Amino acid sequence: MGTARLSLQRLAARRVARPTAQGHGPGPARPIARGGSGDPPRQACRGARVLMALVLAAVAPALTARAAEGPAPAPAAQELAVEDFDFAGPLGSEGARVEKVGRNHFRVTLGHAPNQPTWSNKLQFRLLRHARGIALRVDAVFACEKPQYVFDEYFYSWSADGREWHPVQWGEEGRQRGRRGTLQFPPFPADAVTVGHQVPLSYEDLVGLVEAWAKHPAVRVHVVGRSTGGRNLYRVTVADPAGPPEESRWVHYFANQHPGEHNAQWRMVGMLEWLLSDEGADARRRSVCHFLPMMSPDAPSKGWYRTNSAGVDMNRSYRPEGADPAAQTHEPYVFQKDLEGLMASRAPVTAVWAMHTWGGIVEPIARPGPEMGTALGPWTLLRDTLERHDTADLIKPLKVREKESYGGTSWTDGPHRQFGVTAVLCEGAGAFFTKQQNLDSGVVLIQALAEYYKGTRPAR
Image (cartoon, rainbow, N blue to C red; front, side):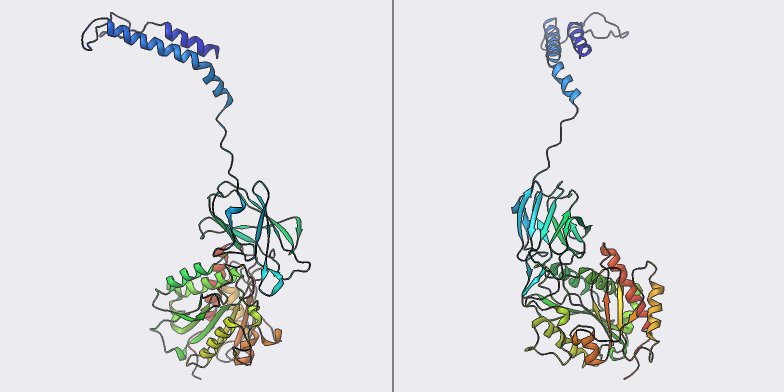
């Protein structure tokens, strides 16, 4: 600091001279014409320079001390408040209550599914503001001694844009499965962030996908009814209108019953979008594929994992004796009645696939129908075809189950008993933490089905 002060003092005392025309050394000063000529302007300029040097000498110690302290500290990260949480958006959690525990640390007490006090809703919410730079901690609590279908069975994801989802896992410290668990998030890159179960898919995002698919000439969108909450119940059909008559095509039916099993929904998206690609052109000419991507569309905004608004497990809702509005709740009845209409049409369904999620990779379990081993090769050929296409080890080998379960009320055993068709319970993918893995597994499935169900269906 002493050196800096000495330099400033020398600057103040030094005579400033202009270079001569012949060189760079000091020489006689030239008069400056500024409304006149002579010494007064030159003396004023010299005085201003001396004054500036004196000011710099006075402030130099403070500037030097600030430089020694280093850069100014960054402003402290903002703090979240209870009011920043929204549990009533497209991805929500009905009955959730939030309270603040500490700085950016909150406790959320979860509600339960309708008429199911032991089935917790999922921890889904949106941070409306102030999330940027925050490493949020959430302790989730479900007040139930013996919970079923627990909130912390699978991972969760967060997103700043609703398209790219980033997984977050449950911490093990202090965890009581189904009753208490902690999610520790990394610092968020944006002020508004959404948190959802698995790789989430809201009803609103599904509508966007359906609207995009509907632009393809091979797609027909059927609204078979409305949910009790007024949302569309979709069946999306892929069939090239330029192909053979539909009665001579293989007909597949893919449906997701449990609305919180989002990984299974993305698997179906992968299947459908492959069919609409150039690679899927031959398959969509020779087949008719029906997709029911969300049979309980009211659920994502409520955090319901398995149910509709009546609290009915959507995969215990089939009635093999036939659809009956008096014996079934609304959405199961509407969808089963629609399936019965397809079965009575000129292009009845060949195979029904119930699309679900549980731990591990994708796991298909079949109850073979009459086409396997007669018009087509044995079911083991489909198993081998799947394995050949599955170069990334996304799917377990296909296996067969002979015995019926749940009294025929599942959407695998129910259609198999009612119509005698092939029925496949397609489980797994709880170990897939990205949307792309789920899409890729769907591509493998539909590629193998397109190869196994070769040609067209024999005349009945």
